[in-house]
Length: 384
Image (tube, rainbow, N blue to C red; front, top):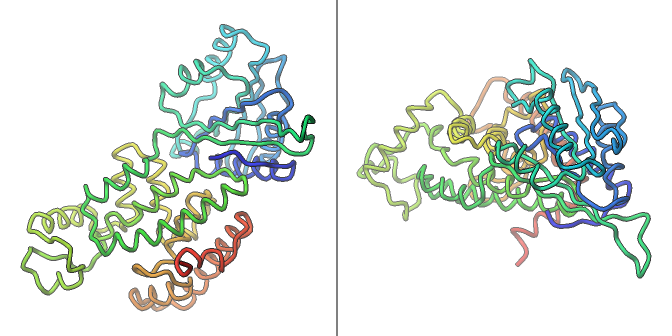
């Protein structure tokens, strides 16, 4: 994330949104490094972050480390806040080693049994980042704070921040594109994916520009892979290269071979009773890309009714998918009308209305947080 200029209100919003993200999207990182000179905003950020969970946290400069505990709905929260500014390297390692054993990082599946432990670490040496976190493939988020100078004076109102996401469980955009080839995603599905990718990246970039904590590469890779194995939901697949009845639904330039047909059928058979969003998540989990898998899974239409909050990354991909009908940019209403025709149900009208209201609420939240309008997003496709 490139540096962004923030005032105290934007800093508070950033802290609240990051707290929300850590809570609902643990795959995205539960360890936060706060970097910057004295007085640049680290302690203020930590206070705002902790207040989201209903607890108070001050800079533990003299105690080195402190733990404050709270609760968010049904989740117990422990915030481990450390400041290594005055500590020797040896003492810092000793303290962090002790607390890391007592407050381990849990995965999503363990939260029902254990408290969620979140680390806020100030002035942590690079060697300790490597030793305690990178070597264990633990996702981290680094926020660097710096003063803004107006002439020769330091601004008391504005700060510059830069956020870096380091996540071994997130695919790069290049790796995501390679998986489209590995899983032989049909060309007409790739056309749809490209529309979704453009919309999702637009939303993510607008959020980033407004100093919100969002991993734009994770959004893009999730959008690229959201329909990677879409064919597992196709009613029928071509049986071989001569299956004219089914091949007519594919793009003329699609090189349909017996081998490709057999591959599609093998993946479809494995996930015959599973929605393609969950099928792709399972594939990504088997490769240990949990973060990308969660974003991909969350584009399943019915996921919007879940009780858990959506991360901003999940929201971008979910919303983008509901603005793309095949390879065309459409309104949410047009997309849902098409879905109702293709998947008719007795209770379709009531469910469609509930779904529409939920998606419109997503849209409103993305527009408010990202400061964009419908005219802005239409320019992606209609302005040359």
